[in-house]
Structures are given as C-alpha cells and as structure tokens.
Image (cartoon, rainbow, N blue to C red; front, side):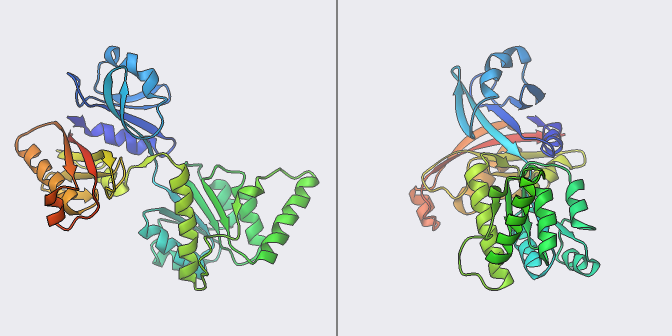
Length: 347
C-alpha cells in the first residue's frame, strides 16, 4: 500500500525539479516504492539497506518503463511538472492560443499590460494573469522546468522586451509571431546591440515564423499551428511522464480518510491508445479521475480495481490484450498489449 504522503511529495517537488519513482515488480519486496531526485531519496517504504545496491543504477536510468536492475524488476519513470504556456499578449491570437492550450492540459499564464485585455484573459479562464509591464512580469516569473513561451504582443517594442527577458531564462520553447520583415528587423537590432556589448542571447532558439505551416489565417487557425509546433517540441524532447493534475491533485489534496487505487500503464506493445506512465485513479465512493484511453482497456482496468478494493488487495499487475477477439467485439481496432500496475493508496 502507498501512503498519501508519496503523492503529496510528488506534487510539491515537481514544482521545482524532476523526480523519479521506482516500484519493485517481483520478489518478496513486490509493490515497494521509491521517490528520489538525483542522490536524494525523498520517500520510500523500502529498507534502505535493501535498496542501496540498486539505487546507483536506478537514478541514472533513461526513459520510462519496466527495467531489470541486477536481476530485480522495477517499473521506473521520470516525473515532471505540468507544462506551462506563458502567453505574452492577450489580443485575438493570444486569447485563442490560451483557450486551446487549456484544452490541451497546459497551465496557462497570460502577460498583458492593458487592463481591458487582461480582463478578456480572465474571462477566458487563464490560470494566472499578470497585468503589469511585461518585461517586469517576465523578470519576476519563477523559473520552472517545462515552460513554453509564445510572444504575440501588439508591437515591435513589446516583442523585443519580451524576447530579451525570455532568452535569459530557462525554457522548453520560445516562439514569436510577426511578419517576416518585422521579425528580421527586431533580430538584427538585438544582434547589433550584442556586438556593441549587450548580453549575448541565443536568438537561434526563437521559433519564427511561429507555428507549423498550415496556411493559418484566423486567430484560431494560428493558435492551432502554434500549439502543433509546441506539442511537437514537447514530445520530441521531454522524456518525462507528466503526472496529470486531474489525477494527482485529488489524491495529494484528499481529506482523510483516503482509500483508493492508482492504475499506471507500465508497458505497451503494438498500437495501444496511451503511453507508458498514463494514470487513472479511483477513490472511495467510486470517484474516477483521469483516463488511460477509454474503451475495453479502461473497462477491464476499472473492473480489476473494483475487485481489488472489495478483496482488500494492495498490489497487482494485469495484462490487457487489445488484439483479442473480445476487444474486436467491443469495436477496439487499436491492437497491442498493455500491462497495468494497480496500487492501493491510503491516508
């Protein structure tokens, strides 16, 4: 069984850094768990004497999935924070962009110095709105991994202010909207100032023209092209499991007493619908948060969770064959096999 503090620790730590978890899948320690970052063990229900022979290898493993370490099977995953999209400018494109990003699960921060436009961002339900000088807002914005910046301001001077501040920070993506002529002039101005002693900036990191070329014309179409580029960058480079807020928050913030089961895809073969690390949780009263792909996969997992809670079991690994005849009868054409780890959670 996994203590609620395990998930509370994840929620707190990923605000500042990535962490990894490792779960023992076989042997007498089956179901035992570890949470760590670098050399620091943040939480474990294993005896440290048993853990230490494996720890040095676990902390440097790449990727996510089932791994064998010195003959012992573990499920290992790197966990990062929810991705942040910082939108500089709340005009027509900025608002369309933040709405789409929210739909895609990003935490959206809007920077705007005009109160009437900041009000539009509030109406569109941005997670945070900083209504102040945009350069100052960027300087004061806390550093976090997984930050994606898009500059869609109303003019050349504001573009430059934002780009110069963003490129001094850590970022996963920087994009700037503007005509070819406007963008070219801006970058040439910054380069000229760099020659004359200004702080060197990695201008080559700026995606401009921003977005994928889909012939976008309307603000909504431009937002689609930008988010398509952001998603491509995210999925090419992240190597992290993003612990979905709709799964993590109900567990970490649940009032006592807590009783539930967390299900995680730990292995997939073929064309299964969701990636390794995808999670769904069922809490007392049969409250379901998240999804692992719907259809027959999710139905079988929820059925197994129900049995596990009735029988008071604490740990199980199940396999769902999506190419089986039963899956075909249900209309599943994905194919493939999925292994799912079920873990009991308590307060």
